Structures are given as structure tokens and as C-alpha cells.
Image 1 (tube, rainbow, N blue to C red):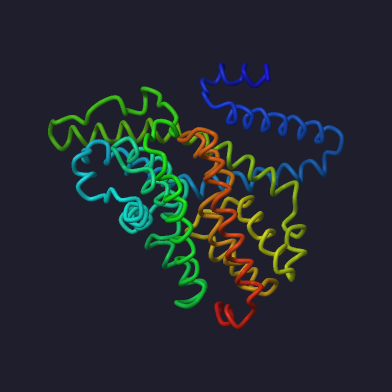
Image 2 (spheres, one colour; image 1 turned 180 degrees about the vertical axis):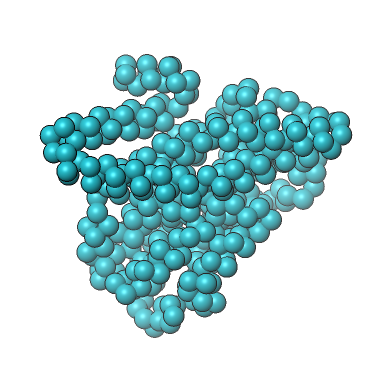
Length: 347
């Protein structure tokens, strides 16, 4: 732990788990260089695959992280707590359901939703509403709805993806509603994020400038979690081939577990994951594909690391495990029910 503590201090990271992720990435790179010296051809193939995958994940996610941080800056400058309180219900069930539908107003994926949700929490958004927003927004937004429909049609897969995502998000939000003080779950913030300042009362141009400064600071703060997440996801994909996870495609339980593990490892953006999932329709029944489409946008490697920059470790564990268990139970039950329930989901 001395190495972890040293890394935590030297990088300014308050989260030991993030420091462990940096350390693990460094070790992986060191092992890759060692392999390159011992077996240059094999190492070159692995390193090329690793670099391609990590860069692809990063480039795919950056625009949406930028969109989320821009929305966060605008919220900080132009939305005050009184306005937010006026439109967000205070009752837990209504707040959770309202939060789950916020993605229709803020079309962000799992990368962009994290900084925006953090800003809304600091503006007084109830925990139940914010947690539901975090989990549902990557699916329940106009861009993802259209991409899912383009891949699978306006039918059962789209309806089940939206319905199951909403249900899991609302239930998880309700479980978090028992905590009355968000400060017990949220991490303290660095001064550079702009939370310690009230928004300026100057001209629109001045306020826009302030919003862009806040967005820039937050982009670089959250971006480090995205970089580490992309590296870890690429490392896992390089070491563990997808075929190893998909050999159990016919088993009603293991097929769901395999597709959820694949969704976690691939760390795809929710705007494009439907087209990747479509490729599995020939080797899997629809319920495992549904598990892929529901769990992946809620929890993957990069979003888990980004959540660690917002929440303390225990709430992040809940945010990973609760959707995992709910998705697993629901999709396995649908799979066991057989084609009478899920027949005709795909075109």
C-alpha cells in the first residue's frame, strides 16, 4: 500500500482505487514492454490491438464527455437552486421517476451524464433523482432511442430496453432515497471545479465565459478517469478474447452473464452499442442481448472509474451491483420464459 499511497500523493488523487488503476495500467505497460523484448512479433500484435481499442474507446467517448461538461457549466451559471427545486419533485418515487426521464432533456451518454449529475447534486438535486438520472439517461434519451430503433426496429427490443432501464433506475434511486444527506455519499470537490463560487450576475457574455471555464476545468478533471477506464477496458479486451465469453451462448443463465461481462469490458458508448449488439443476434437469444443493452450503458469500466470521482467507494459498489443483480434476474427470467415471451424482438 506504500506504493499506492505514494502514487495517490504524487498525482493529487484522493481516491486510492483510482491510484490502483493507474498503478495497474503502468504494470500492464511494463509487462507489455517485457513481452516485446522476449517475443517481438506477438508483442507487436498485442500492443497494436491494445492501442487501437483504447484509442477507439477514448475518441468515441470524448465528444459526449465534452457535451456533459458543457451542460454542467451551463447549469452552474444559469440554474440556481430555487429554480431546480421548483421543478424537481421532493417525494422519492416522483423524484426517481422524474430523474430517470431527465435524459430526454439532456441527451448525454454514460460519460457525459456523470459530470452533469455531479453538478445537479451540488445544486440540490435529490439523491433518488440524481441516481435514477445517472442510470437511465444513457438509454432514455432521443439519440439512443433512435439508434436502438435503427438497429432493432420499433418493436420488442426497444420497448424492453427502455422499460427495463427505467425500472432499474427508478428502483435504485428509491434505495438511495433513504440517505438524507448527500454529503455522506459524495466526494469532496477540488476548488478548480468552480463549485465554491456563485454564478456571476454580469452580462450573458460574462456568464457564458464563466460556464466555459468551469466546463474546461471539469473536462480535464473527469477526463483522467476516462483515460484510465479506456486503458483498462482495452487491456481486458486484449487479454480476454470475446469468443471466450460467447461460447456459452445457448445457456439461459451463463449466456446472460457472458453478455453482461462483455458489455462491461467493451465500454461502448450507448449511442452505438445497439449496432454492436445486432451482430450477436445470430449466435444468441434476445434476452442476453437485452442484458448487454441495459447493463452496459449503466455500468462499464470507464463509467465506474468516473463514478469513483463523484461518489465514495461504498455507493459506487451499490451503483455497480444493484443494476447488475436486477438486470441479471430480469433477463434470466425472460430467457427461461422462452420464445413465447421474447419471440419477434429482432428483425
